[in-house]
Figure 1 (spheres, rainbow, N blue to C red):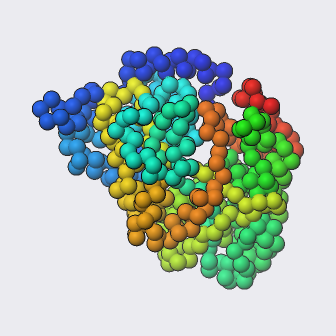
Figure 2: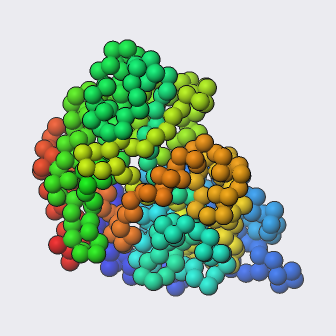
Figure 3: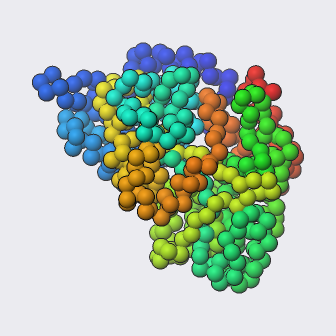
Length: 424
């Protein structure tokens, strides 16, 4: 459950108290007096998925090769629980990590609560001009830097080449194309055309952008999700499910969607680079060349997908800040970003890494980098992360038939105005 907006002032006060006292369970903030080398423990909360966490654990622990007097405690934290778990630990001044892998939308939220250490003029910020401009933007809040970028991403259409070939259809460029060919895919292969994520509001955004809409107009401080484009986005999702062009699930979309795609029950799904390794583990993709990736299908007005990614943030109450800054620097370094691309096909946030041959020729980078360059920026505001819960509620209401698209858009807009009290 997310914190209510009414508790923000209290939480911020608790955060200031926590940061004044310190709160990490790691070793003390000190350097070895004899060698000047960093020492103590750095606890790292890793929010990567099951297919990635083994690699990240090894990379994190390899930090000790550079700093042998430091112990790295790698803790795998479920992404769905990580946001609230960190807030509870930081707000309660007990059990928060020194460094956390933070989703890009969390940075402004955590910083606003006082939970993150400003990183300007610390060892964590290294060669900042090497970062992609869009990735660097997600680390900023109220004129300060509260994270360093690690990986960037966006959503794309994953497709099973064999199924589309057997069905005699092309990769859809629009939702209309997808819907038109769905019956042919079903008749000739037995597969449903698309798996539609109905349980995660992030997957709503390509439908919203496809109708020419957005959540907010940040410059005008205006809520726009309940405009006509928002209504059409809910309609588009509902139409795909009602027409049987798409399967959906309202409770466990990740596992069910991945299983359906890997087993050939669906021909396509919308997902990001984080799903590549898991997808390739499926029986349909024993031949890796059977996996295709293309731009998300366009709506009636446009084509677009959201900019996402992951950053590294340092807890303001850490008792080992010097080592934590160095660890964040290491985990966002060109060396580590190259390694995560080579081993996991994730996209770097440093421009220099794209010049490395092994990265430049990575199949998924070849597609996703142009997509990332054109991805739609989200509003990097303190309330940005809380804007997804109203979408989730309305999306599920529409897909379950409990609400109309018009009502869903209105309800979402009304919820936004309660969160953003001074917005129109």
